[in-house]
Length: 85
Image (tube, rainbow, N blue to C red; front, side):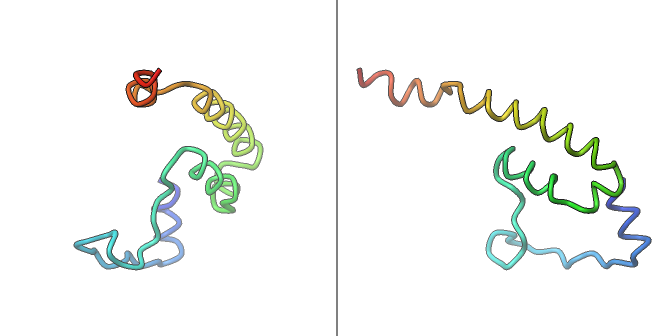
């Protein structure tokens, strides 16, 4: 909602559609939660729209979630490595 409104207010144009998004110079989206959090935390746009207090608190919660995720053994890891021992 916020980004759409900002696009209208700033008269931004929508980029051209692409058939193969990974075969051009288009900016890639973050590939994991931590990378997305870093982009969100550094975004002046969301700090302006939502407030720095919200952005900082949300990032703190999600960084704790990311740490819990890193501390778990995934099903893939179990299948891949546990059968070796």
